[in-house]
Each structure stands twice: as structure tokens, then as C-alpha cells.
Length: 456
Image (cartoon, one colour):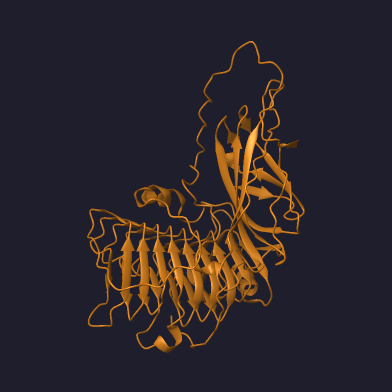
């Protein structure tokens, strides 16, 4: 999709990782006989002006628990904007975080990882100092409870019954990582009260309105062409939400989040990002479109594309739309692609012009018919920790006499695939991230990529 070139400038602000480890814990007894104890670790994994990401690990040291509520108080006015692995009510002040279906059960010795994106006051972002679980203050020790019943419980915990839909393996519900954390971070509509839409007129109006908004999409919406999305928007799908026939046009916008939607049969692009910055595209399922699945161009910058599944489709991810657009694109087009599933796609996974550094990590290339990553016109692409299966040409530099791009490749797994062609140098990655071992990426991505895999 073509658009009018627009020059935009953004200042890089490196995320500051702040870690607070809290060893606390008492679980409320689930019966009169239950011993209780737990360990809670709260970690601020990324921080930028106005926003941050935190991870919470809850480990059960006592008797098995089925259903939990984790409580804490934010000491400096922090607010949760979106969470994974729990629901929060309220989202600021004194928090009650309630389990979701897949992690309700905590047998003895097991843990669950949950987390959230939040806002802070830019002055101080201290960690909570006290946690409660099921209403009991955590102490870091195991409380014995009342004497055991006549029938001695087993010495090993019973296995957890798997849910009907297995929870993601690894970090599918992890928060925002990558380039979209830079330049001030990406929060979309933030903690604005959500509006639910279930028809084209309402969606078109809400997405194109001025001001911050959180838009929840329900049902199937049929359309054609492109729907404009303005700045400071979060568009997130409720379970099963599907867009048929059209796509989202994020043009001249900043601070946009699109998550948990299915797109199919679009007649232009599914997602077009042009002359825009601070955009997060996450947990989409995309198939059978006329043109690009996710195209990024015209000087766009600070974008993360994560946990998406693309199948039954030819052109996946375009980064940089024209060989002659270097004046606008050089120094921009900084994008992170991680934990995406290229499921039988053909080309552009991604194809990269000019952007440097572009970060492609922990993706699963599954029977890609033509090529995986292509680097052109002086672009710099770091390709690491990916899993290539039945992909003849995993990555290469240049095509048909165009100026070569640069590729640094490391730590990838190749199964029934070529080895790729790398060379040149790539600029450094400025943000913190955690790599999954490439040998585990196939199972992790298959379990976690696409719509319907998160609680958003």
C-alpha cells in the first residue's frame, strides 16, 4: 500500500531495567489441614518514561492450591494497563490479581509466571513490599496448619490436569519487548475505559477518533479497503474476534497497540504502518490476503511485531517499500520481530530495506516456500535463535544486483533447511531481551503464537 511520505523524528530513550526480588509468602489453607507457604518474585523487566513491564513469579511451597488471589499495594501510584496470566481489579492502588483458567491450580513445589504493562509517575517506581495470597500475608516460611488427616497425603504432588487448550509454553504472554519499548515506549490507549465494538461503523469511528482509546472488538466484522487508526489507540480482540476483507491503516500515528485479532481475506494489507512510530502488533492470526500481512514503511520507527501466526498467505512482512526511499528510511525502520510463526508463507519473512538494526529472533519458519529473511540496500538484520524447518533459503543478502544488506546470524537451528547467507555488520541492540534456546522455539511458538493465546 502506497502513502504520502512524512518525515518524523523520535529520540531514543533506553529502557532501564529495575529488578526487585521479594521473597515472601503464605498461602491460605484450602482446608483445615493445609500447610501454607509461597515465594513471590516481582521483577521490573523494562522501564521507560511513563511506562514499565513487570513479571511476577508465584511459587507454592505448601499444600496444593486450586484457585488463587494475589494482593499487593502499589507504593507510588502505579497503574496496570494490561495483564497476562491474571485479571486485576482494581488496576491501581490496592490490587487483587485473580488467576485465569489455565493457571488456577498450583500443586506443591510448582510456580506460575504472570505479568503486566503499567504506567508510573516518572519520579519513582518502587516495587511492592508485601504480598498476600488468598488473603493471608506472605512470610516466606511454611505454616504447618492443623494436624494431617488420618489418610496421609501422597509425598509427591498430584499432576496438574491440563486445560482443554494447553497454556503457552515459555513466555507467550510476556509483555512488550523490543523496539516498541524505545522512544518513550508504547502503551496505546493506556488505562482508558474500554469501548466494545461489534460492527464496522462503530469500529471505524472508534479507531479514527482523536484522543486515547481502548477498543475491544467482538464477533466478526466484514469490510473492504483500510480502516484508519489514529494515535494513542489500543485495539484488542475479545475471544474469536475476526476482521474479514479489510485491514488497519496506521498512517502518521504514534503509540498504537493491536492485539489478539484474526484477519483474513483482506483486499489490500492486513496491517499497514507508514510514517508512524511506537507501534506494537501482537498475537494476531493472519491468512489469505491480497497483499502484505504486516507492512512497515515510509520512515516508521520503534515497532515490535510479536507472537503472530501467518498461514495460507504469500507476502508476510515488508519493511521498507521502495528502493528509492532511502532519504526517509535511513536511520528509521527499527523493528523487532520475535516469536512469530511463518506457517507455509512464501516470501518477505521479513524483506528489509534500509533499517538497521532490525532484530529477528526466536521465530519459527515452518515450510517457507521461497525465502525467509532478505536484507537489502544497506539494511542491518540480526537473525538469532530462530528455528528453520523445511525452509530452503532461510536468509540472504541482496537480490538481482541491488545493494547488499547486512546480516549477522547466530544460534539458529536448521532442520531440513539451507544454512543461509550472512555477512557484513549490524548495529547494536539497545534494549534488554531474553532469548529462548533455538531448539525449543518450534514448540514454544506453536503453543503461543496467534490470536486466542492471551488474556488481554
